[in-house]
Length: 291
Figure 1: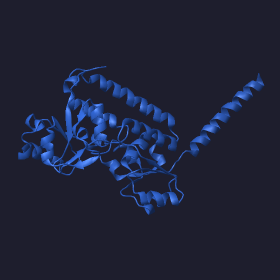
Figure 2: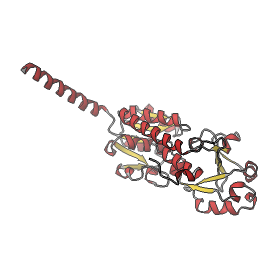
Figure 3: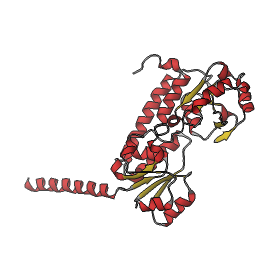
Figure 4: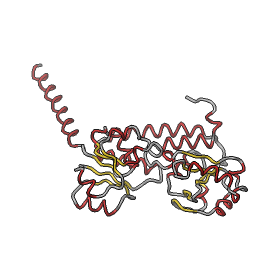
């Protein structure tokens, strides 16, 4: 009996020691170079394990972690090699749109750099969360986040009426930019039960289009990003623009400003964007509460 008791104590101590060693092996000096990795990282690890995130993480207009990011010591903008190296990180998180030259130099200096590459689909976001989670040693947290995403998306899908004709949207601002396929906006619209007119017209990525093109497309709904510098004037300018008076969205007053943090996020916070978009497309579905 005494031997069995000592054996159990030994096993318990061994497990605790193993868990302690595993925790120590996890990166403790992490630097994130993009807003997308900022958002994922801050949901997976405590701020004390993070040396720096981007300055954009503090901007509540585009960031879904603006409050949490305040606890991180450094907030960097356009980080160069010297800035990152000076922090002495044990892990750097970047994306395929980060500076290729900076990434190469960091790798050449022997730093561990994890690069995310998929941003235009829900599966891509799931993959990115899991990649970051493996790098920081928080795999279980990642699966919890993904499970919660899937549950919330399923609940939102139940709000969308079952009908064959879906609302047709166009992302547009007064400077002429729209979002086609292979963009976060396209994923949002699809998940919210709408159709992205730019994608259906063959536009890939973000592209400038003319007012004549918008008139020819004749969208039912037009969406603009409220974070853009001219956002405060966009709605009024589009409504009053002579060239757009024949467009259905203008005639029916269906021009909507949506916060940038909902339209452009490439993290698990895309769920909030889906909810915002679903509310715009199907307001009656949210008139009554659902469990």
